[in-house]
Amino acid sequence: MPQDPLLKHLYAVILAGGSGTRFWPLSRRRFPKQLLELFGRGSLLEQTVARLKDLVPPERIYIFTNQLLHAEICRRFPRIPSHQIVAEPAARNTAPTIGLAAHEVLRRDPDGIMVVLPADQVVTKLGQFRNALRQACRLAETEGISVVIGLKPSRPETGYGYIRVGNPLRRMKGLQIFEVLKFTEKPNLATARRFVAAGDYFWNGGMFIWRATTLQRNLARYQPGMERLLSRIARAGGVRATATLRRLFPRMEKISIDYALMEKIPEIYAVTVDLGWSDVGSWSTVYELRPKDEKGNSQPAQSLCLNSERNLIVADRKFVVAVGVRDLIVVDTDDALLVCAQSSAQDVGKAVQELERRGLKHLL
Image 1 (spheres, one colour):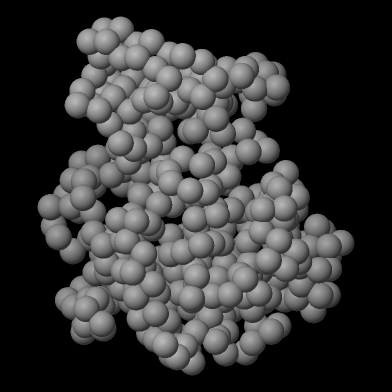
Image 2 (tube, rainbow, N blue to C red):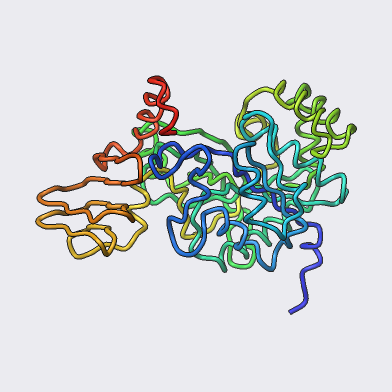
């Protein structure tokens, strides 16, 4: 099958700098969620890279992470050039990172199209994913157009961002294309319920596609201070100019791409698709996605559940016995044990903050 000529200009930017505190105690600062093997073969990051097969070769993949994870990610991905696995000198959220990536793409290819992907998501429908990216690239090939992958919501979720769309504009290879009218970040439960009932809201999974020139020009217009710093880094040599990067990158505002640009810029379109998608936001999501027995327990082979229902047990080193308990999350590691109500899974991150406040850094 001949390759689509458009794909010759496609570059992947994978965001892999998060700490994944809601997956403590399995997730730690040096081994966060994106490096965990929670589903299927390979870590979430490895699955993200594998998903790009036949779309983006390793020499056009960039991974942005932090100093703690840089060496481990380089070790896991020897086919990706090491200078394209970038250790950010400071956590500045997604807008400065994506802007830095745009300059790297432009250094190589003035016609470069970049697809931005989070490193910590599950996508089970690979054919739909690849088709959606191809159609998104065809839209984004036009200067000035930005594209987001819109995901049909299955429930009112307060941890996700939403996009509101207008009337369908057209269909491309079985996918509906909409103009995006509005971005809303993480609504409260009542608002999320209203969004799902309305039918014209989709989840924003943080997957964006632009020409690198489109992104750069939007940054220059809407975030001129950030773009000036990014241009100075680019003139000094980009991500290889480590001294300049360390000096200037931390001076940028800590802001997401949604707030920095997507809520402001014109000409945004959504490619809507069912990807079998999950952002794996907490242990309760792991419970939903993993196989379960007839009582709804997700447990390892070396465990026993008696008169117990709807529990998630993650334990590789000990034989765990659960008796008469329901709706629990139990995660065992060498140095820590988590016991949590399913309904409180989102609060595990707060427990990590408390451990840090008490100075228990060896557990982090």
